[in-house]
Image: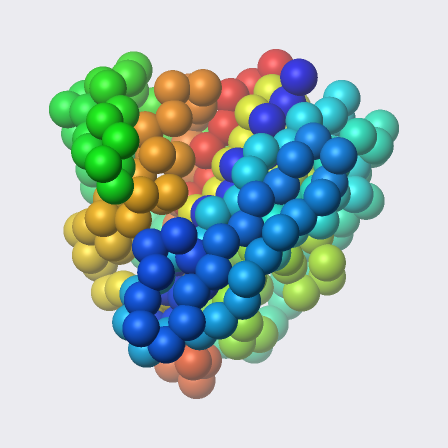
Length: 231
């Protein structure tokens, strides 16, 4: 069984379970691909959650305000992300070390995720394939100035992971935009109940993350975390 959990966070305009002035929304998805979403936007941080998806392999599931059923036998997404923005994001080893350390520090202590105590869980290991997957999506968002789990080419998080050659059992994604540092984006995620739970999810064993920048885009910097456990 595969489980897909998708969460998003933005510094300036977000939708989700955190709630805020100006609009909020929640999304949940069942194994049959149904989705319920209340849209909205805000000048202050909120979050969006989606439910979990089960299936035999990564197929043509839908993402964005919810994740559809991934029951296909092959991946149909593509990653022709060739924008013209600047590729100067924090995708180097220093960022990787800092992000992994921050995530594992949170997992080691346990976290109060919006009133739900998530106990300490095992540390994650860094995976270069998941890092590459994260960078491609951050770069796509930065270069083409959008903010979504759905790639410009229509790809879902699970499709992007599969396309990079990672055979997964569980996979999840966090995205964010506007935060300038690892500590800032981690603080935002940990203060959001849904994102906090994703970081503390004991079913994940590996992760990768990256950011990319484009001064001409809406938020300037775009972050992606990808969590997974291999088959």
